[in-house]
Image 1 (tube, rainbow, N blue to C red):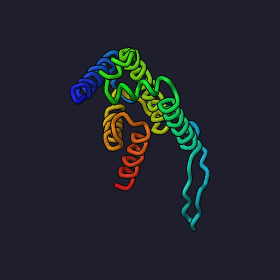
Image 2: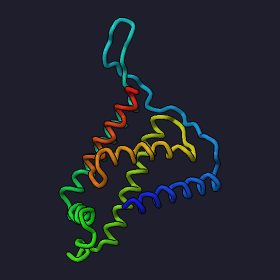
Image 3: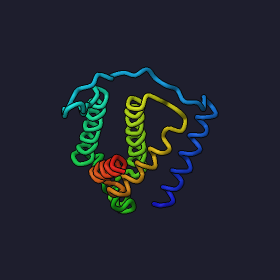
Image 4: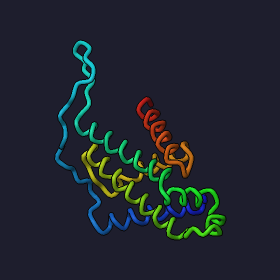
Length: 168
């Protein structure tokens, strides 16, 4: 498993550099959208607020996490995916098409990464060839903290990394 993880990191670097060379290496800034602030707490001159964009991000992230959780616990794909995570050889012996499950898992991961990229772009308002590197390492840390192969654990690991980063 560690070999595949290291190969994935190497492939990510190759793909990032290919995109940088094919496109433009400078940052692209977007016009701010969903900037309307909603006050949460008032105390004298201080007010804690949340923007419409942050509310949208929270709703999208919660929806995606919920759908992934339901998919992994209540669907035939989820059962087969969990079987492959537990023991890929035994899953193949049980008649599961392991290559198809691995392909669908990569497709699901790529779709999740696309949603995350859109959320990050909405929040920070910039796009560059290098924007995913630090976030990818944070996601890897969250997955390791929460347990590789566990959606709920990855969500809890992401919350832990976010709280640690915020309080740091």
